Image (cartoon, rainbow, N blue to C red; front, side):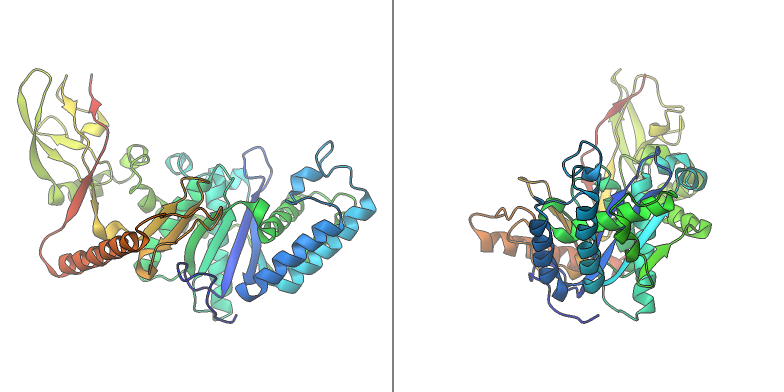
Length: 415
């Protein structure tokens, strides 16, 4: 694995990148799969050019999606012999350009049995498969004595992309705490534009066929040759799931949408945090009376209403008719990554805060220019913001106080 500069100074330097796709990640499928390939960036451009040539030689208009070979689908009429010729070349291209391929499989039963319901409500089987694949990627990097971080590139069209973002944020947090997982940035791109993401779809599809005990359809037998000694399988391990569950609980507690359902998981610990970090405030009830409350800055984001109850979000013992304010605070030390979303195509780019140097000039997916005027001023402002954030973090680490900022949260009203 040879280090080199990536295609843009706005992106993290990465010699190796991991392109992933999913297959069958719903509870009706016997196996959920996330699979893909590791590739040196120095091989990337040649891969893309050759991929386009292969599709052109077979009269296929990009993209190549495995689901389109089904009956009555766009590629369903391709003959058996032509399919075989196509996939012989596809497999040869992948094998000649990859650092390696990998897979993570998970059955719906394993998913349900090993993840508590509050976690499943916020983490799909797709997000968990990504996490297992990321752990396997870390193991491969450790085996190869690779010291760099490996960015993840995935298809932007998957409905569970937000679950991957949650998992990825959790990996970055673990790295900040001193446990390197070789996790670089997370990027979402349209697989119609990138042959390497279409190749990841071929790998994930082939893995799911094998994991489900299904034979390759006629003409697609060459796909089997991908799964040789350079292919790595992340088999199900209960201890992995336990570790990932514990870390996801911590990650989801930082998600405002997940706090309520996770609240009961850590009541006593949260109460200790509340006693240490709450501050008295006044909240006016609908009857005009004024009650002293404490705004809880822990996982629930709720309030304690005097002697009537500990946390208003639990709806226990709150003064009848009182409007409960939910206060949400964020400490600057909680910021672990920066995310830029394109308003045009909705593609996202995520940069670890500790490695961020400058904002991207254009969207990496649709090439929409992010700043059409005062570009230098905008970049300077963002750099100064990051600089100030780091400076405040350094001050609070040495000082005897905590600094946080309140963010908007919807008010709730008890009956």
